[in-house]
Image 1: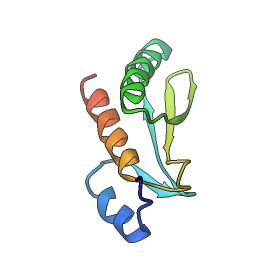
Image 2: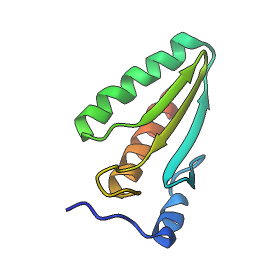
Image 3: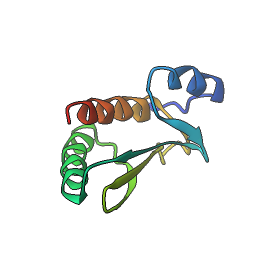
Image 4: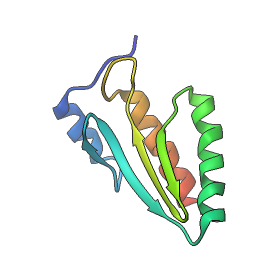
Amino acid sequence: MIVKLSESKINEKLKEIDGWEYHDNALHTTFEFNDFKDAFSVMTRIAFEAEVQNHHPDWSNVYNKLQISLSTHDVGGITEKDFKLAKTIDTIIEGE
């Protein structure tokens, strides 16, 4: 069973991921790349990992910027799944 995390637990776990914020019941971050091709390439890699984890981000891309929001819709909030995907995304970005 997936468990919704308390706000205090979310704030504690935010210390484990750099550049992510918690507001509006989701984790949020923005990345900027050299150009559209680089942004889209990273989105593709994230998409494959999200599919493996069966957890998909809400995101938008405009030219070289990628905005990502993570929440677990089934429980109406943040779960361990969101933090796991955030860490995976950070690993992908660091590899760039």
